[in-house]
Length: 460
Image 1 (cartoon, helix red, strand yellow):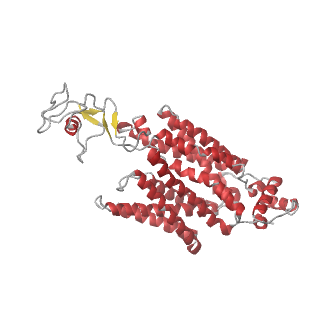
Image 2 (cartoon, rainbow, N blue to C red):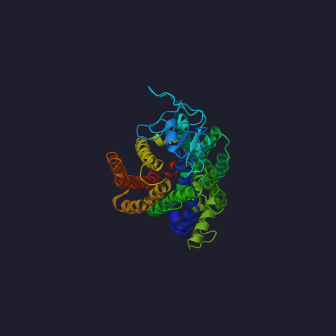
Image 3 (cartoon, rainbow, N blue to C red):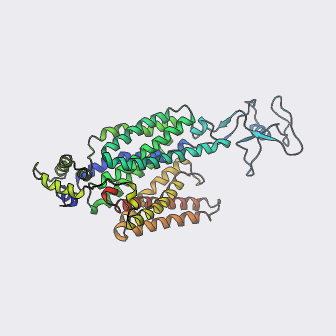
């Protein structure tokens, strides 16, 4: 007997599977709230050099600033430099107290801001950029936080992939929840940039556990025919998280409280694991027949297929376990061991690079669309809903491979055309960016469905 036949006896798609998808909705929603958090967490508000001695009640504030700050080529005042000597302006006779007209001839000398920056706090009361002055010469450190975070995701994906096969999906999901909660709280309480980077990198590694574990834990309780609908349904929770982030970011403008708000839901997530079933298929591959028997009986009971303790005979389960069990534990080298697996793995690597590069490249850059950051985030989340519905339809009628290729091609065309659109055509630029986001999300959803079915259970 194969495991698929065993699953068919207890119900391969019913209340048990839907309950399992619902229990695993929380990590799905938490992932985008952390992955896309830099949109708000690391936002850089308008800023300029702090200028001591500025007259508080001076009516010509703009003129005073123009005398002390150089202009950029686009006519805006510099954010990173100031005049070492205040400059004389046409039709003005005022300089700050104790100031002199400075250099009236030749190129005026400038210098970096000596006493920090003044930030526009109308949109964000606090971000990591304003907390540690990660602007101007230090702006690279601000951008590096996302790089370190996703480096942690990479390391965590490798680690959780191996450990979840060794110790079980459910146990490692608990470890991911606890680690994310503890490290998220530590990040929110960071007293220095170095502490923040370290804790966020480790948080990324913990969140990778959600990415690696949740999909197999759902799919291994489903038959092949229902994996598409369940995959699209569970992917919808990601979209809910994207839109929820825009609301939470709008309501909470301080980065510490915002980070705390997207971390605390891990606590009820830990409690929900009491009802999350371990993968019966994984249990059988490990020879843990008694535990698999208990979960299969629960599945049958919830799906309305009551079976006695002896309905699923230990002999039948032992045969399935023998069939599923592998003599040697799989390793990542097995992904490249045979020509067929090598071909699949290399193609998947290229595909996933394109999927991630386009999706996060769009999602983490929400400027220049004529909308504020909250509206853009909400719009980017809303466009994912119809894209997922289209994926469901196209996968059924055109197949996974053509759907994946079409979604990636649509993303490339939308982004390529947007490069040709001038800044004056703001509406077209926004429409193309949103269209590209929809296609990139379609590619992301299809990639999850496609990849999970290309490998046997032990390698998945």
